[in-house]
Length: 186
Image 1 (cartoon, one colour):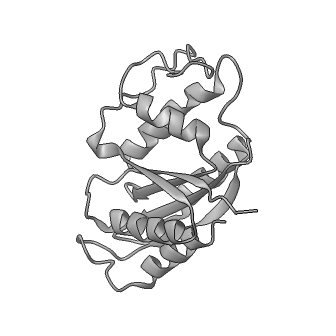
Image 2 (cartoon, helix red, strand yellow):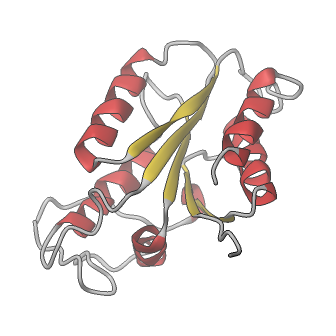
């Protein structure tokens, strides 16, 4: 029997396509693909995604479960079908970027209506973050609570502090750690 790789969705919340977070994403994706996995990355800053309205009008069974019609319609089918999700973001005020938080909030539509298509389902998740500083404690608390709520396996995280300018992460061990984390997914 031939082993089939995992379907991995990366939500990249960085505003910079070639920034430090995006370099972590690239290293992770290379590792994951080298292990036979399929990786789909969504660069959220280049997408039209509106904030959640809190309307509780979502229906998980619909092709686009949210009442809003925007670029989340591209993300929902990939998330429904994935085995692993990766949340990637720079650290902004001790949390994920607004781009990533907005997309994560909108995933709630997959928990509404016809059945919960988000929580459980043998999914796993990893967190990739780059930052100028090293204060990741608050975002890790949020991430841990999110994993608990979603009942997803926490694959861990790569947290790369001390990266002020684009490219500062070059040559740092966190890039290899991101590659190794991706490669570990089987």
